[in-house]
Image 1 (cartoon, rainbow, N blue to C red):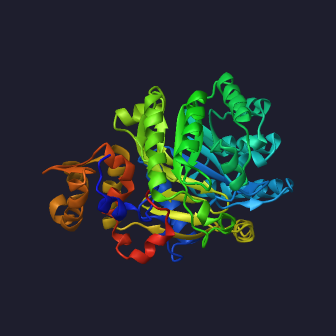
Image 2 (cartoon, rainbow, N blue to C red):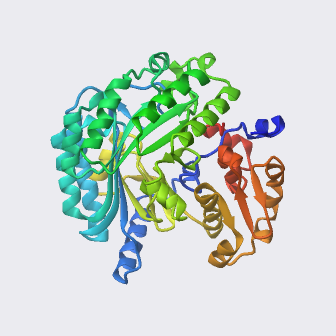
Image 3 (spheres, helix red, strand yellow):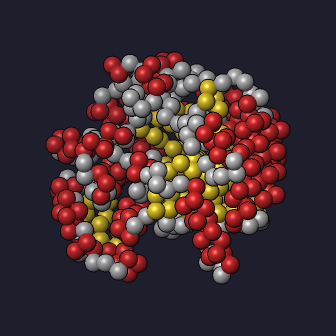
Length: 460
């Protein structure tokens, strides 16, 4: 890439990943259980006239046996596995609260278990939870049923049990195979152990196998990360998620154990990202966008080619704009033109559900301006292209008038070769995909004050 140094400095700033717009930091406490219940009732009323798509479900399992220093997830570190039983009981009650408002047997096209470490729960506990979900909802035949797996807590035999429960997609947290990096982030797992699990998942006929990687971790170098990329390509997972490490020790206590002097400088982060993208593409992967890659035959790559790619709180997705019910502590969901988040601590979450109330503690009802900007930002993030006519017809605006300031602000990015501007469209270039968050940020009304940006990871 021949990108001016001045432009790189401008882009080396914190910014959102845009799994939603507005982003979760804009949620307000004025949106609570009553507002969320009303959004559910509105969906139920729409279902009566056949006006709603299938649901997406997310279950947050917060428990982990040990802490990974880089982690920014909502988690509870414990070796007391009996805590899982109480959590499942409360989850079941939360599910009942939803069914009481929207009705039993509603179709679900996407179900995802995240965390924490969902595999902290025993097979018996996971199977019981799946039984509850199948009783209260209807998983459609082609539903995506996925689970995040910590390779340190799984065996090939256990993957077979998960497959028999109905999980058909699996994601392994790899992060990095370099021993020095693994020690620096307190997550030691061998290449061989992950290889054996990937082979077992393939034998069990999982429809999609994903590997998560992180660049920008302590002790990483372009050379060491290149070796990890080569090893991952040898494993050949169907999908790869490549995340930039977000060092925010002021917000996430475990990150305080990472010495800032061990973190790679921005120029090395750019080299690692560029080499990873090139390495995956050379190995036959399709670059989905920003942080996702997939083999050409994978559903994510097919959706990319057909212009059906979407983005939700779990990242890129083949699912259309589904309503998302988030279950469990800290879960973030979407219902109609609203977002919501559950309580972040177990005592708060337990108390609310046991009172027979939703555990929502904050959220947001989107304005007309939010909806317009969300459409533009998601078009940039998913298709890399904003066709003015489609936005104008859907939202009854004139792009060049409504976004005059933003289009002017894109000019330096156009001069730097990151976007192409025409009379009827914005097109992200191949180089621009490295910095697509920076392109999308131009249309984010809430990022005008620089002080807000420190909440996010850096773009590069």
